[in-house]
Every structure is written in C-alpha cells, then in structure tokens.
Image (cartoon, rainbow, N blue to C red; front, side, top):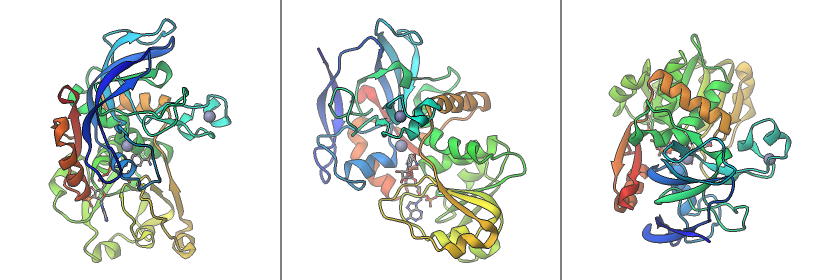
Length: 347
Ligand code: NAP
Ligand code: ZN
Ligand code: ZN
C-alpha cells in the first residue's frame, strides 16, 4: 500500500515544474515517514531536470536538501521516533556490501548510491525527491538535525553543507591553511563559513565584487573578482586548497596557477561539459586536481554537529512552491542569496 504526496515535478526537460501528486511506498520495517517542512533548491536539481547530466524519466520531482519531522516509524526502526527533527540529503540507499560501503563511504558506493531523486529504488521505481509533502526513507540514510540550527535554514546543509565540508575536512583545512572558494552561490557560501570555522584563511574568487560585503560577513578574509585579470597575477602560487563550486566550465589553468607547492584544487561544481587540463599547469608546483562528491552519512552527521557547535547556518530565501520556476531562473543568473528553500506547507 502506498500513500499520496503532493509535489512539484518537472514534466519534461523543457517545461516548468508543476504541481502534482506522487505515490510514496508504504512504511517498511526499517523505514521512517517524514513530513517535509523545508526543501532546499540545489543547482544539481536544475542540471538534473533539464537533462544536462543525461536522460532521466519524467515526471521527476527533485530536491535533496530535506528537513522535516518524523511522523511514523517501521517496527524495526531503532534510532528515530515520531516528533524527531530529521534531514535527508542526496542519497537514500547504497549496496552496503562493496568495499567503499563497508568503509562507511556510501557516497562512493561502487554500485552507485541510490540518489534521493532520479535513481532506481530498491523496489524498481524511480526515486522522487524533496519538493514534496512527505517522503519514506530507510533509517540508515536519515540524519538528526540539531535543535540549535534554525529549522527554516537547516535544509541546505544536507547537500551544500556536506559537499563543501567533506573536501575541506579531507584536505585538512585548518589554522595556517590558505583556502580559496571559487563561486559564492549555495555551495560557495557554505564553503566560506565552514572553512572559516575550521580556522583557515579564506579567499573568495567571485565573478564580481557585488557580494563582497556578504563574503566578508560570512568569514572570508579576502575577496577578489575573477573578471579582473590582475587577480590572477596578485594571487599566483598562493593557495593550499581551492574549492571550485562553479556550475559552469571555467578555465582550470588560470585557477591551478594560484596553487602553491603541493596545493590541491578540488572540483565540487559539476558542469556537464568536460574540463580540459594542461599537465603543465599541474607540473609546476607539483599541484593536484581532484573532485569530491557529497559525503557519507556519518560525515553528514559530523557536519551537522560541527555547524551546530560553531553556530553555522546557511543564508536562505524562503519561497512558496509556486515560485520555484522563477527561483531556478535566479539561480541560473547567479542571483541567489544564497540558497532558495521551499516552504513545504505551500506545496
Ligand atoms: P549556485 O548556487 O548556482 O552557485 C554557483 C556559483 O558559481 C554562482 O553563484 C556564481 O558565483 C558562480 N558561477 C556561475 N556561473 C558561472 C560562470 N559561468 N563562470 C564563473 N562563475 C560562475 O550552484 P550550487 O547549488 O552552489 O551548485 C554549484 C555546482 O555544484 C553545480 O554544478 C552543482 O550541480 C554542483 N554540486 C555538486 C555536488 C557534489 O557532490 N560534487 C553537490 C552539490 C552540487 P559568483 O556569482 O560568486 O561568481
Ligand atoms: Zn545538491
Ligand atoms: Zn556499495
């Protein structure tokens, strides 16, 4: 038996999202039923519904920054109870058997983790995401949202937060580390706040200086415009770590030249197009280029607790569900300050 949820879905790659209903699976023994309160809007949602990352099945509901309240639990659920404040991020299952899953890194499941949307679920149906009134998720993929993080603004931590926390932690951002964040949108503004909280010296590399005051308020020490060619001369050979959050292709050579000896540039931005690299840009200064994908469930909980401890919350603009198509246009013109969050009561 299934239950009906209201949702906003993309009918095709080219049409606006529309109000509709979808079926959620019945609450199984290890499942948690979550009444969604807020759902963040990630640029990945746009890449996905528009087919930029490859064909998907329609209609498709996206959204993988979900915060809500547990309303029912299955008979074997041990960690959650009705009334708990919880979150769901970018994945809802994994194979649980491969070497990466056994190492607690389900985000790198060798069989591919089950995405919160546009993935084949264990019952063969296509997963439908968070722009919806409720969702059923295996308790192993549910996070606990600390009380001290404001309910309305917690949702973006479930993707933008963990996707930036994970590489900052892995590449050891700490006092004395010089970190640059390229692009200050949803992911970028979280990267600034988290890197600052980790004690790093943080520089924002944005297309213009229009958001400089915000960047400094979020904890950046320096802020430069990449439209100004002198930026690349001024900052040559100066960063230990660059986190690239840009959703479009950029000239990697220019940015790699900003890394100091043994520095690493990590791409979290996921444009569909390949990004060409000259090996000579890496050879000088023995630089590395890497990419990072979301984070594990354990690391996501660690990130939520870190944000609670450091008083970090995303900057959000709350919208009603019928404003989603306008919000997409604003994300695409870098006019987001800094994450749209859908009030699920309006779905
Ligand atoms: P977003 O809010 O749109 O932020 C992207 C920022 O990149 C913009 O605010 C803008 O910052 C900059 N930018 C946009 N177009 C640009 C261009 N043509 N040239 C230079 N800079 C440009 O998007 P988001 O939600 O943070 O997501 C960013 C990317 O990360 C997307 O590709 C998304 O799919 C990907 N992502 C990856 C993962 C992962 O696991 N790796 C997880 C989540 C998202 P300024 O205005 O400051 O220049
Ligand atoms: Zn995302
Ligand atoms: Zn696996």
